[in-house]
Each structure stands twice: as structure tokens, then as C-alpha cells.
Length: 273
Image (cartoon, rainbow, N blue to C red; front, side):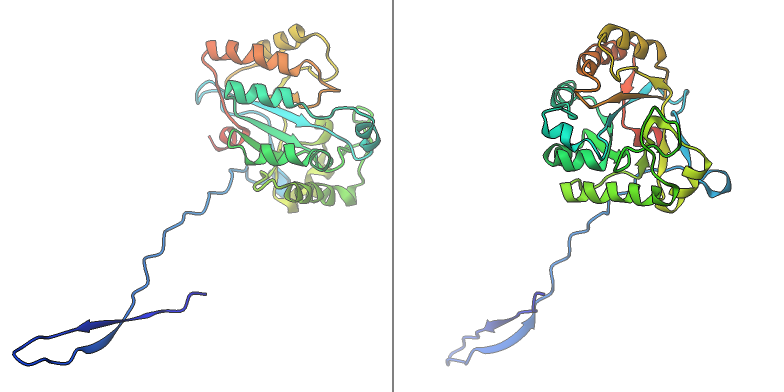
């Protein structure tokens, strides 16, 4: 706390004879405080039917030629030993390509990934080119029979999502978005109801890149270019071991979509438009 200071101003009057200087204390007025504007909250969708977590798939088809590239930074809770043995669940080359091309993107990150790569998570979270969103902590499925993923029980779904946000904060991500992507994209009414108290918007996609476990970059590129429409959300991956072609695909897709008049945006812009 700053204590007010009083300043003494001396007014000296000279006449034929020397007059004394009288001192009159004057209060110091506080300087006007700088006006700060709080950052606006990221746009979200209103709850769905029955108050369930809303689901966003794509943006407007008529409000300009925009497209959002999204990247899942996947790492399941039980893959620590594989990472310790040298498997790369990150992809610095991909992130460098996005920065080089000046392409904004949304990264759906698992909490376990943020724990494994805290410096990269912090760098993404503090770079205005990107926004970090939630992909669960464990990358366990929220339904049964979801691409062979382990499942999280219904009573642990909310805690799993909140645990991911806690992991982001520990890594130094200052403002993770209130967007959630279900592992594998698998969800049902029970899962949507479980996440309602968290206040997130579930984000799906309308273009499957096919980069997961792909080795043919040209085939992935064709699939993206053939699928993109105004307002599209493209799902890709930010894991070298599971998606080794993604950097090459991005370096080809971005200039071609630019030539078609598309503008790249984050998911938040699509939701807010």
C-alpha cells in the first residue's frame, strides 16, 4: 500500500523589510489510475437441449472463406514409459512450420502431454498465434468401444477434464480455452451431461485429415483439400510418432488453401462469428 505524502510549498514575500516565509501544507492528489480493460471471455455456445454440453462441428458456410486447423496433442496417461524410452509425442517441426507460415491454430492438448512437455505447452499457451484447448487429462475414451482406447468411468469424466486444466496451469499456460475435444471424438448423452458443470463447448470437426498413423503425405493432403469448405474445422495431430506426415501436409495445404481464398482462424473465431 502506498501512503499519501504531503508536500510543503513555501511562499516567500519580499517587501521593503524582510518578511518571513510562511509554509502551507498542500495535499498531494493521487495520479489518475491507468484504465485497464479486462480481456473478453472466449466465445462459447449456449447449452444444448436439456442443458447438456453444446457441441460445435463447423462454422458458418456463408460468413467468408475461413477454416480452422486444429491439432490434437495426444498422450495417454499410461504412455510415460514409452516417452522415457524415446518415443516422441510432440512435433516441434510442425509448430515451427505453423509459425513460419503465420497460420493460427487451436491445439487440443491432453494434461499428460502438458506434463511431459511443459516448456512446449507454455510456449504454445503464450504465443498469440495459438490457443490451447482441453483434450482430457488421460486421453481415455468417454464412451465404450472407441478405437480401442481405455475408458474413463462416468463419475470421473468431469475430474479428468478439470485435471487437464490444472496441468496446463502448472505448465504455465495462462489462458486455456473453455473448449473440449473428446478423445477419439467419441461421446454420448451421458458424457455431455457429465461435463455440463465444467462449462465447456465440445468441439468436433467436419474434415478428417487422416493423418493419424498415415505414411502417405500426398493422400492426406488430398483428403484435406477435398474436404475443406467455408467454416470447416480440420482435425490433425501434433504427435511425431503417431502422425509423421503432418508437417509436410501443412506446408502443402496452407499455400493451396490461400490460393483458393481461404483465411486461417482459430476455433474461437469460428464459434464467435
